[in-house]
Length: 267
Image (cartoon, rainbow, N blue to C red):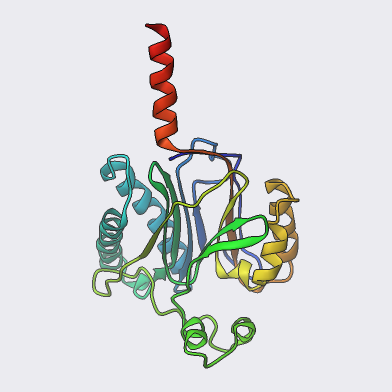
């Protein structure tokens, strides 16, 4: 599968908090249409610990995957990157005891030859939209999502629940190891959107709101502006996101056949 993306758009803002404990990779000013890996993290811990955790996770994940993925990324390599990150968290806390308890969520997307690999830990989300419909949405590792899955609360009550910020999985360190949920999306078409965001975004937008936003009538840049306008001055949390428009998708076999046909025509 050969996937070409349009220009990605992103933001990472402190919102209603004193400092921004979110982190995204790559930085918005550095991204281009050749980018394959996108990461959004939401740090927890307070007193700048969350900021350190999210920044470290972004940097360590992308460094490991760039060094050891050998061109393809799957669940095994993602969880090895996670273990690598957890070990470095331990080392940092050992050298900086005040950072004990720091943790972060992680949501990532990788565009590869076999499809789009989606992984997440915690309650930062990845959505896959097509013409205003959700084709895939990650399931939060949070207390309220677990209660919803058990039919203890309604979906619309999740955003106002008093324990909505309690997460059940996070990157902390190898003393508290975890695993990422990993899925590979192969049903990908021209005009689809991938959307990665922290809870500071989806607390301001229902699934219905997001479906309307990504119904194909708005440009990616316009979607970015709408998201920022709604979140600024309204959310009490940091908010971060990446919008990745799918420009063109070709089957790898078709690409290979076209290349072979071209060379045969020269003979």
